[in-house]
Length: 377
Image 1 (cartoon, rainbow, N blue to C red):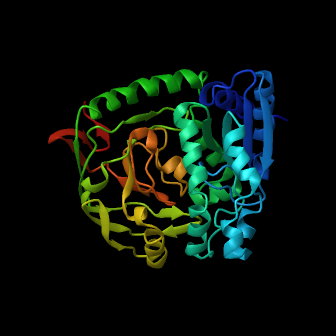
Image 2: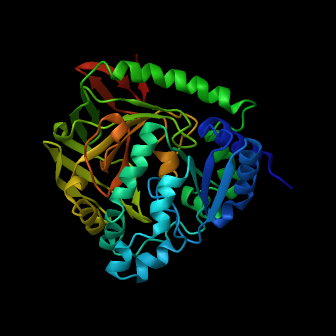
């Protein structure tokens, strides 16, 4: 029996998030557990007049920006030579040019499948694909390529979140407003609320963040704040930009575990001077943290700062697709900036780390604008 929530999510992704039009070439990259949702998305894309193509992955799915064509990604990382890790298959190059829309569906049956792989090997694989990522970003900025990513509930994701599968499914679909009669209307309302925040922030330059263990300043004048309203990712619910590279100064304590490439790092504290991380410590995963920071010159700089504004997401789940959107939080990403915001930092790394702001404050050019997890504007 078809789950009606799959049908509803498929329709929202095809019509609202990706805006599929007749003649669009759509690449759907997913893991096998997501097959019920993939089937409904494929059907919805056909009804929209598109030409959908499906790539089922047998391993962990790479992040957005690396088009998924090699379904044995984890085997390559573990067993490939350095030359094989650097090798760009022609399909990888073609994929970034050949599609009008790209949808990634994460449906992990083992969320730690990449843990234990030497971080230097992960960095090498990603560095070899920087040009592909740049081209992906260029096409996305120009509007030639629309993209989105979503999560299909699995036992592994539920276990990471500390929930039963049934409860996790309810959580996932509520986070996307799919428990409401008209999810798109709910996303449009959120888009209006977030645009008000964007309009405020773009009038200001210095952002001063104060929370437990955190006193951080950066500048965003001249940068573009973006409204993530269910189109970049699904679910969504954040506003974000890239700070001026050398402007980040101070200290930040990361409230929640920082997960990257299947590895969890806890108790992260970072000190910035003129934009660069000059001190980094963790209560667990220190070696991995340092290895990621040392992989290239841009990895020690901030590529993104953002406010999580989806208040339907109320708990940490060890899944960045939800956690970075959690209402009452901020996050920063070490590494690559988003060119569409005006950010210039380049790196193979983009690692989102989340700060709880329910007892914090944010000042914009000295004006208190955010307190106890909410904007006051």
